[in-house]
Length: 409
Image (cartoon, rainbow, N blue to C red):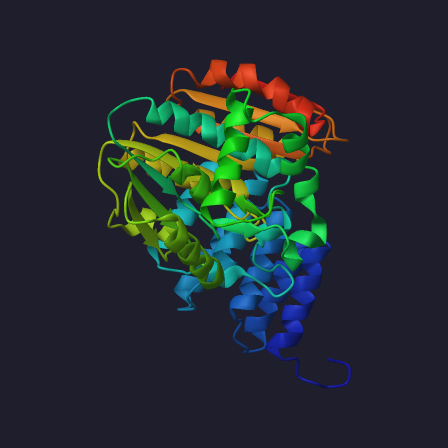
């Protein structure tokens, strides 16, 4: 362009800086960003996000954060893409405390995390996995937690930070696209007699009760209850449920589901059409004090910085209510990320932490190619460890899973 005596526009510089980011050439990215000013153009948020990302890929976190500060100096307000690029730069250098602080700053500036979604990333659609092996494992552990909480006469509050739709139609187009329920809840239903007792049988009985409560006339399972619908079956008249869902379509489905499940008797219910992370940061709290069971089951394909978001939520929850039992579900995909999550939670020094994991059919508990499901529980009920040790072998056999483990961090 210079040879043809054409003046480059910011968009041309942005394309070049992005190319440097992809090829991990952070020095060239910084040089191009400086040149934008030299030719008397003004870089925009996209220019800086590409530059910050390039520095992050090169593990130059100091330079990445310097660019973020530079945006403020030039009165160019950072957006969520800029903040997340800075967070990932800190993560790449294993500076998770700085990453957490940056996330706190982003939320403090009232930057909307949902604005980070791009058309090719898309929102998480839980219907694709509904009733699959990961759901079965997660919900079996949840049932164990609910049983332990309900064993005490004192009231408790169940808080679902990402409630989604509540109930899933196994004949829907999305669910039939992957048919994960055939390898999950149906496989367990064929292998386990729900009248025999035990944790897995109790989980299955709850799935069937939900089908009956919602008027399913089929002898086969036609609906799959998500975490809120399962939890509802263990909540008593003295208990409370607080269910968060930020996305409009799942929230409306959640509201419809509970209009059928809630017959006006039983526990108190609070449906929150709100981002639970923002509410966690700025309040007010919509639940009472006392015993709490909090479920964190975030949409893992909507934000790349999974560990930072999860540790942020754990830290905030336990700062506000140190005695709460908090259960975090996570997928077993990458061994390094899972180990990093465990290490970060240990560093929080928040109390006792129990981990349960299961590797699914065709995967192995070693290397970098994990496929499975994990649940990390802070402040677990005393009997949970023994209950899971006794139940997981049966669940593993029913799911034809490769292996499982229960351990203290």
